[in-house]
Image (tube, rainbow, N blue to C red; front, side, top):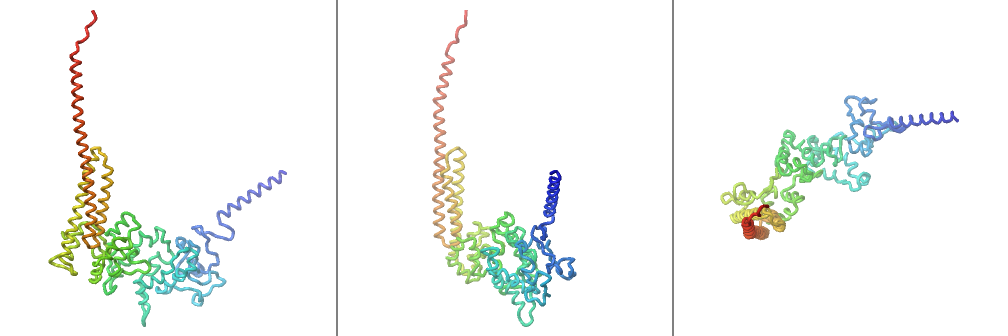
Length: 460
């Protein structure tokens, strides 16, 4: 019995040691990589040449090892070399790339979009990883400025592929380091998109002699965007909803918006303003004159923060650029200048009335009066001011006047209520003072009466 117990203890120790060994080395028959996924089998054909120190590796062969691929989204999803490059993954079935029709080469830049599109353009395949995955990226790319330039350079009697044109790998962290678009470290994460685009578009040498529609491409767009209201919102405030390059120009189908589509690009975010502008005669006039809609007044890359100083005919106003009587442009009239001047005057009037109403409300509140009602109503005046600023884009005085009149009506009512509260405070002070008179009189009489009383005589 004792020997049996010793035997069981011995077997238990053996099992524990075996379990510990399996935990340290992995399951039998499976190795593990540093990211916890299954490593490539020992007879994986690609590693014979592309692993540094592999049996057939030489200095002129590009290296692609597991540790370099661990952060790639494809690798994390379980895809391996042969899933993208084709060919046979095992040594037994391996063929020379030149003789293997299943091998997909990326020997030239113009082949990269099709290489990626082999999977990303097949909806049946992509559904394995994301049910609503897009599969039109490659088709969009060939319609973009990048795709058109690349295609044109690869065609003709003497093709010379333009190596400066961006392809998939230039934007998506290279060949084997492609990250998920949701990864904050990804080059196409919203806060990184502008910097990614600037790698090419801020390169003066690369942009030299490049044109679009006959106009030379600049190389200061990123610096301008950083100083604009959109760039500052993204960089300084961390607002990921602020537009970067791709929000206005597109992603895979990136192109500069045309003159007749700038307002639509801006309208993606500024929907109400875009709708108002689209219904005006000014939009068509802008298009006739070749002016880029919203960007004419607000700028394109360095979008300026809108302010009331932009309206009117004073120094620094934008209306003065075209409606100046001495130097009119694009058919602008003196009547237009007068309308702009009146709009600014009435806008300033509402702002002044709001300030006065707010001052009276604060004064009444400081004196302890109940002013929650007037303070709440004053918010309607602020709403009217905001609405009026939006209605400027109708280029019509009537809608603007209606919004301003509503705001002026509210401020008048609030000022009256605040003034009534101040009068009530004064009335209370007067009645308090009046009530103190008889009280003080009674106190004085009591004091006189007390003093008139004779002191009690002492004991004999």
